[in-house]
Image 1 (cartoon, rainbow, N blue to C red):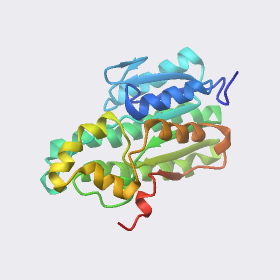
Image 2 (cartoon, rainbow, N blue to C red; image 1 turned 120 degrees about the horizontal axis):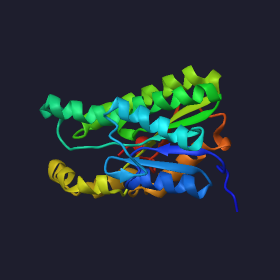
Image 3 (cartoon, rainbow, N blue to C red; image 1 turned 135 degrees about the vertical axis):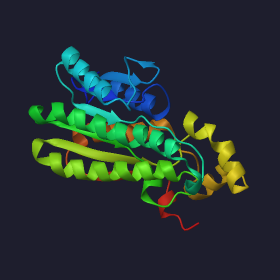
Image 4 (cartoon, rainbow, N blue to C red; image 1 turned 45 degrees about the horizontal axis):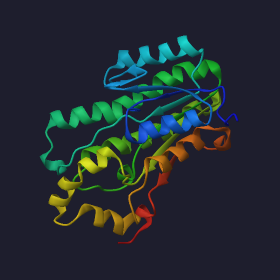
Length: 240
């Protein structure tokens, strides 16, 4: 049985684990041909800090598959540290992955999609980019930039038949989030998962986020562009 993305070609960055892997799996389950990239493997080994490497990866997809219909700019990292204590090297390294990498991936995807007259670019942001986020301020600043890039590109590329949207998850049960739970717990003086649970009910799952990405990649979302879609169990609407 064919899926709704049958015949389409997708590129997913940071697809080695977590949300990226779930997005790649979900797109493939709907029939898309998925090219997975990651720093330490995938179909293409890719460091999203490298402008030339991203351009080469996109060219490789087109050479092998003839087109690029879907680009999911997901690669990202995080660390826990008060913003006023962050070194410039720490700031620049995170920004080069979480913000520059998204910009470069989206730009290179657009380079291919504009002549095609179609495409969907989906950038992974976060609810942290929509509000103040103590202890993860560097990550939040980058994600705020991702939201802004997505809104602007969505408007600039709309007349070329290309849609650009951002996905803003809350805390999800991924390896990256789990790896920082102890640091968050120590910093706030109580179990971080309890705090998260009070705000969003529970940790989300990578698969739930991937379902939204698949929707945005499909024709079901053809009237959606330049938007930031929140998926957080109500955290941004909570008063607690």
